[in-house]
Amino acid sequence: MNPDDPRAQRTRASLRAAVLDLAVERDLSALTVSAVAGRAGVNRATFYLHYPDVDALAADAMEEEVAEVAGAAALCPLDAPRDHAPEPLTTLFAHVSENAELYACMLGGQGSPRFRARLTERLTGELEARFAAGSRPGGYDDVPPGVHAAYLAGALTGVIAHWVTGPRDTPPAEVALAFWRLFRMT
Image 1: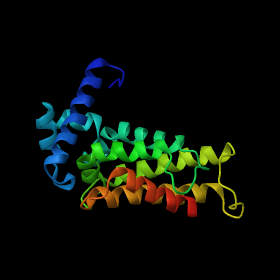
Image 2: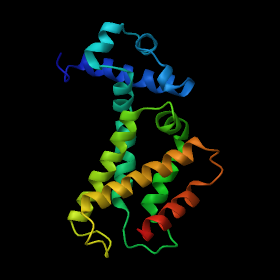
Image 3: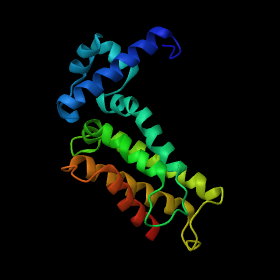
């Protein structure tokens, strides 16, 4: 199968839309290939031509979300004052808030391990690149940059997961500021 073929692209787009629609309706772990294929209007064999399982599809379907979060995180000036969350971080949490149900489905206890791993991996990569370019906060010369980046990426992923799977009674700007204050302590 040629992934550049317009038919394959349409099929993959239908499958991605179907899994995201269904994930909001029920636990991701309860989704079957048959249910996703049926919602997408394809058969199970077609599903398996494109994805090995529902979790791989869910992770692929969330790739734009991963890019959005990682891109916003990469824009944060690491030297902003402790009591003022950088605008890209506030924007990131506003984006997550607007898509909170979807993030809760993907990051909750019955969510997508591949999505969580992909999000953390992409954030780690963005931070590591920033550190290599000289934008690393001072005072951490005794910590390898990759370890530092992984630690911060895991923390951000964890805060997002905690926030979207909880009562969400804290406004996005307040969560961004709380995370920023913790980030600045590291």
